[in-house]
Image 1 (cartoon, rainbow, N blue to C red):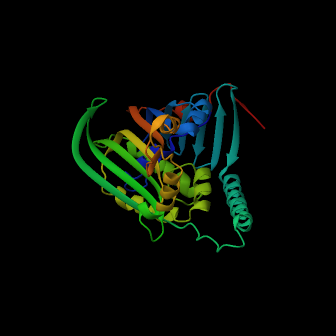
Image 2 (image 1 turned 30 degrees about the vertical axis):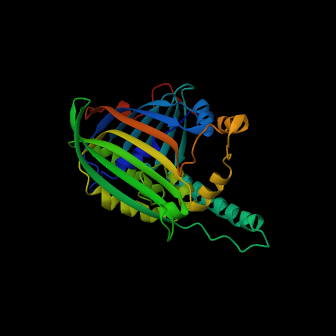
Image 3 (image 1 turned 120 degrees about the horizontal axis):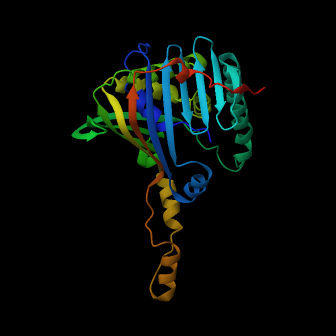
Length: 323
């Protein structure tokens, strides 16, 4: 299954300085994803929890491979080559075609949201307030150090909080993404992948989010405030210097005050005797928590090298184009 380390890339992007390509680089990394709860168990059966990934940048090209799936992006040609290593085939899409698809996707999502609004509204009640998010971004230098993969690293924690506009996180609910990062002194070539990803995102979509433009379009259509988040992250990223060697990202949802009251009201009252004991046992005997972990990702940089060849960023020999 094709998949990219979205949250790890998002955490990595804040380390950028100036988006300029300087040299060639090749990396090997591993990403582990753990989903929580019932949905987590379903997702774990549908996707690989451990992903080995190789990336290489040479000139105007960047290649990425996750298992049997790969991609080559050519900024000069403005083309995206999607590779199927199992079938030894590839498809080609231009940046212009990608932009058109993104605009169509954004339009459909906006139309769908507009169509669902009247259906969900109870005529007897006042319309609910629109969901407007505000983002808080913070960077904390903990002072802790550790040696990882033969490199001396320091701990930096990047926290991104999304909450209802005009309310605290506890009042209106939202989500929190905590990135526990261990940064080594800047490694030769490490910035190249970040810079290339930035250029690609800007060329196709115009957003500096450092994630796949298709995902950026979907998220931006739902949450226009992501543009402000991008700017805030770049500003906070200026405080961080170094190459992320290990990043653990935890994504949590936070219940609002109303949701907490509703959840607590549904808890069994318990009481004494056999009935109370059974009620508590069936409910798992758990207290209602305002926070729920959705998923945790761990991204580890295993190797980095500036020895890159044309073959590292080219379509493998024997692959055919799939029309």
